[in-house]
Image (cartoon, rainbow, N blue to C red; front, side):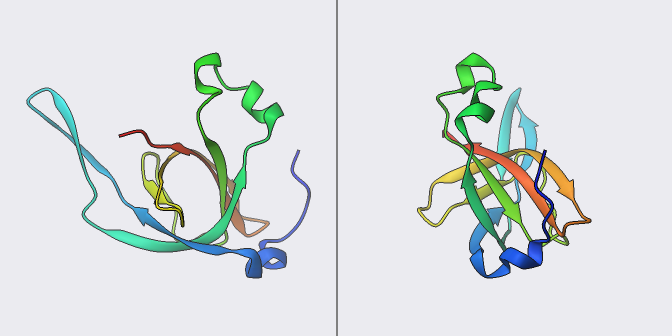
Length: 114
């Protein structure tokens, strides 16, 4: 269960990350991704805890999982969008949890292996 807080309590903790909107198309039986535009979104990057990683399928536990908590509820990220962290590593959005009453959206992201 999540603690009850409002995103405004953490607004100064945020960092700006680049988000690439990914469009997937199938060309000659292969999936081709393109990201024609990118935007900046504010939020907080939080590593996933060991207990939460244990709930992932066994083959995925060694992957680099993070939470990205965004205070910008008007800029919803979609599954497969790519977040460029400040270290310039790409992370892919795998899941999102809407917490509109608290003023934030929580995304599960994983390092995107190219």
